[in-house]
Picture 1 (cartoon, rainbow, N blue to C red):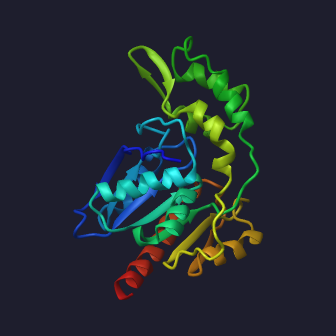
Picture 2 (cartoon, rainbow, N blue to C red):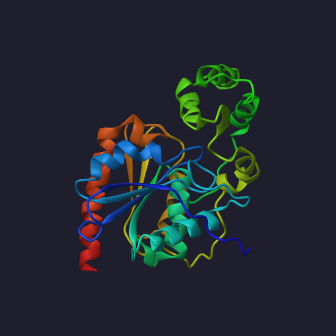
Length: 272
């Protein structure tokens, strides 16, 4: 395509990188680095943790083009900019797909992979109501988040979802706006809910964990053969009672499962 990478804004936690393995957390659609902050702080005593905003999200630049090869290229450039040979990637939803794509096309950059409540498949597009709600917010007339929430509530009944979206509403010099690039996300939604075509022979040979919510429908049994084909060392683990937002809904269980996998993955990488 000829598109250049985007320089990603990021937050940093933990001890000096040369003394601890580096983890990179990638957020989901409409999210930002802030979503992973609690998890990152819980790991900073053992790891060097980097949490970037992906393109068209958070404080990272907006760009006209958006797909998984481009987002993965942004992360590859980010790894290089940090002076790292590789990192352990943990991604939720859209961020999980970014991590999976990078692991498949640039496996030397990925020491281990954790995909949270997502699989390398195309999902049906069910975001029309969210886009309709976001477009219904009259940014030129609202006085604050409470008024914006009232606009969103006409379309979205889940208050947790509305608060998740409203984290992205910011005021600059008296003008309200969304941190994410709403127009580009609307245009790219089919690519975001999809997954790029790839040669059947391409695999990630490293350790991988597919960690999903027990009551979520994002990782169905029918997807397991695809996961095993692409990620032959993959482990699949369910967190009982958790939905799509696994790390927020069951934080203790999520951290325990993540730490167990990371301990094993680091051991594998050191002996391989």
